[in-house]
Image 1: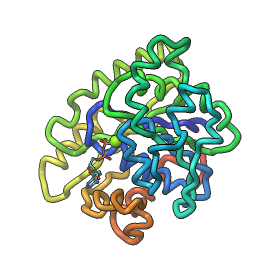
Image 2: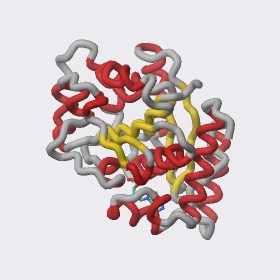
Image 3: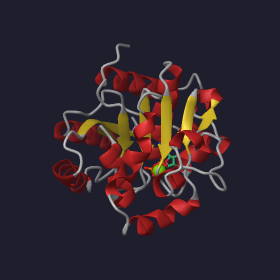
Image 4: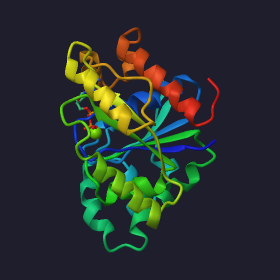
Length: 256
Ligand code: ADP
Ligand code: MG
């Protein structure tokens, strides 16, 4: 299988990275895949979105900085049939603490080595920056999924992201590729949203067929510590994320 480790990346905040990482993780869990969700954002939104408290327990920070085995830091979320490697506020300090370390770009890659035979998919939720944490994610990943919000100037900043992917490919991770671009927060009532979809599709042939609709339920689910599949199983948002998870399965070589 190609594309086992997937980073959800876009240096813009609020475009749907965390929502998409959490929902695809849960969608793959429902398809009986063994999934590890890695929360690499110090804000720990993915951790809390699946009902886990990151503060005060070992998580991705300890795995990267103190070489604590990932397997002893993961928390199982039975309702979504996934494991999560939690973030915590001390991850914010990692940016600075990583700088003097040997192989500072490869700490996450090293930490994730012993996930190879335990998980079918490792999904990394990146912070909203092209920082050293994100570089660690891009170095560890086989491929990336880029969430893009259906809004004015949607493509703004994406050329910088593409440049960063090229840089990582040249220096750290030659095999890194874009698995897909996913359009989020689509509002069918606006003409702008439809234009954005067309524009993004014309720039990125890898754009997923599935478009994620704007949904109040999706914005409510995290505060209940539930994925959309638990919070609103029969809604349009869970249908969309189930379809996206199936596209991910198909693109990574798993028949659905
Ligand atoms: P990022 O991780 O890129 O910063 P988030 O996934 O946290 O983005 O999304 C930003 C905000 O938008 C959050 O409050 C989230 O709940 C909300 N949101 C994400 N996707 C949708 C959607 N499809 N419809 C409505 N709200 C959404
Ligand atoms: Mg986020």
